[in-house]
Length: 566
Image (cartoon, rainbow, N blue to C red):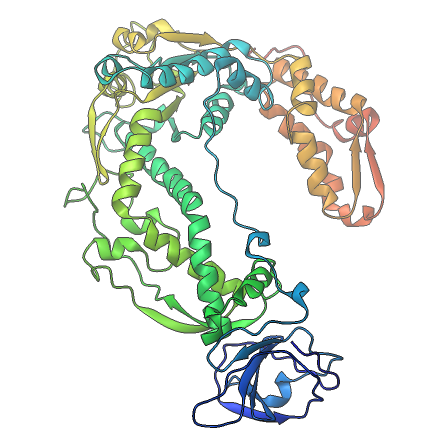
């Protein structure tokens, strides 16, 4: 297109509506653009997009078409050139520009990344991955990794053989703070499986006031719903972003959005250059979800611990597809036009697109399959519902809970508001310290349903040092990073870290053994004053060595005449 010298036009784009026209004087240069002639007039008619505005020419006179809500004076700025303008003929046929550098090729515009499916790891690979986050306890890592791989092997069998393979349920025996929970949690995160932690002491026998053991499966299903929801959103996001970009381009350019020149604008849009521009977009009307069940749900109330429909979805979510699925609208979603920045509009439009694409049936079916095939239940403090042999007396949280747990671990069907869940192939990991009782005090039937028994060892001073220094973004790294946000440079010397490890070992030996949790207590005490007065150290370097640790922990009294539990 022809370059124009002199006055340049830059418009703040808020949707193009031809409500205001301003004559503009421009010095013309020769051009080879091919505009069309109107049938009702011999004058040539063409228009151009000038930095987001519409420059319209009828014959030899130029006009600027601005949004009806914008004042002309606030929409025009001076500049040295309008070389970024695009020319179009009256019937929206694009006119070639002399400067092709401004036009971007479709293939060069960055596309949203496609989600990749993780490959199933072998037991040694799973154990090596756990080594990055959990120190020691090699036997427990091996057992958990083998149990996870066993599930993969089962899926390779035919359907009849598959049903006869029982999961390798595990009983972990070890003191508090030795890594029982962390191993299970990290492994579930690595393999991306539905995972729930429950304390056995929170459950009571069926018929007594409190939560029954079946509610743990409902919790697992809720965890599966959230996990699958994230997976589906990640899966559909690339396609939804394409639609959102088209809607934003339509709001930005109006009728011009159908022209090939939108390639350039799409590139600007994805690079974030237009995020602060305002547009008018149609967004779904937010409304409160009505309580009630969904597919497969009983009409009456559920047992304690269940969720209402609205609890599944975030409070800030726009009207989603579940409303229409329950009969509230039959697929019709009310919308309203709002003036938003492109940054805000993109979030709302993306949310609406994802809600429209993810159906209720797909979400529930995939969640049911994930829970039944890959679900992991970690039942902690199992020793607290075990009574020593020979003891008598009613206890609604003891042997009765063990008996209620038997059919769930063995395999049964549990009714939830999402449908019936089979627990036959859910992996159960039970854990306890077993200080006051022994594993043999458990019901014989329950012992038989936990075939893999692993003993975890108390952590040593060397283990504490490795916990502080080796794991990715461990306790020390977290502390340094958090204090660094205030502008201070904090460094821990090796002797300082070893002093913390030594002190933790002493306190666990002579006071109470809390395992690795003791490290958090000591690190917090060491950095307490520093954290409170960190503003005074802005731009300074602070070294935490042995002397620093000793000065901050001198108030800790350790009675070495008494010895705590190891």
